[in-house]
Image 1 (cartoon, rainbow, N blue to C red):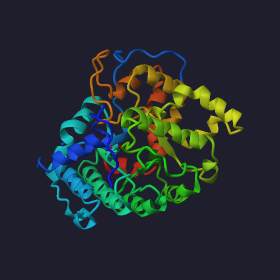
Image 2 (image 1 turned 180 degrees about the vertical axis):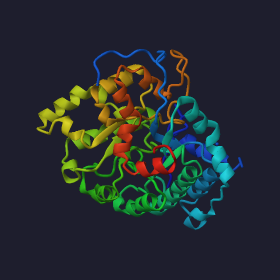
Image 3 (image 1 turned 90 degrees about the vertical axis):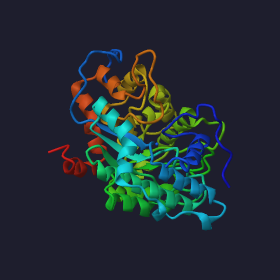
Image 4 (image 1 turned 90 degrees about the horizontal axis):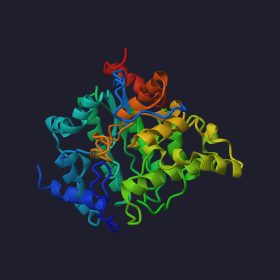
Length: 394
């Protein structure tokens, strides 16, 4: 059965809509045939915007073609009558529809903001791992990942794929490894999104450090791909999706890493905490102190495997992030078109124009280059072949 919907408050997030709004969109789809110490300057500083390679490690397909949303609606409607569920092959979308779905927003904003390439994954709130069963999740993941592949194949200079995994509450992540391998070895994807809470806000599965997750970590290490720790929609009305559930997920995952020996077992596993790491960089002393009190290794050891992105939508937050976390552990990201789309009345610029904040930050050009591309190329080693094939690197 479909769980109780999210509260309507704050339901206007196109990236990861609370489920009521996402399903409302699905219903409509059938009727529509879319480390420095100095303080930084303000976001309106006159520093020229960088023109080198800029990789946005956090992009979601939030402008899916109507036919794709209609397919998902049919699937959800058939959860209690599987015989009526559509097959992945039932979805038909033309190349022109795929191009049109990203031209007015993603491509336009990439050009305006000087972003070279986005690591592109399915809509996070749309993953809906708490809906249906393992078959539901697998078919939806295949549809979603195949659409990402089409976007990246048609516009390889703008997008490269990051996959959704067919997770289901209570089902071993081993169930995800075949789809991950397909996406990496056949579709050319460079990473995956890992939902630490497939139950949608009820946290019914074991922590990420538990052996329950080891089959997935083993496959990621084998394929040499990182994972972004990213929850999906909230089915728990206590947690607004983007305002609470997302940041809870990032913060909770970090504490699971602090209190475990996960990276002793997987020393080459690389995991990215999006949204600026949730609460972590802004309470760094708390986590350093907790690690010390719990007789855990210092956070500097953890940072061999853990990374943060720059989806922080104000200058002071970016400045603190870059002061606390080394540039070697921060990847540029904007999550456009995503969680926060509006114009900040204090600056006159879009909240999610995070490149503006990086340009205004009091950091060295060397660190800025790491943020924009260097760290991403190291964390996502499979990017090299894509950058070369797309003509973005020699």
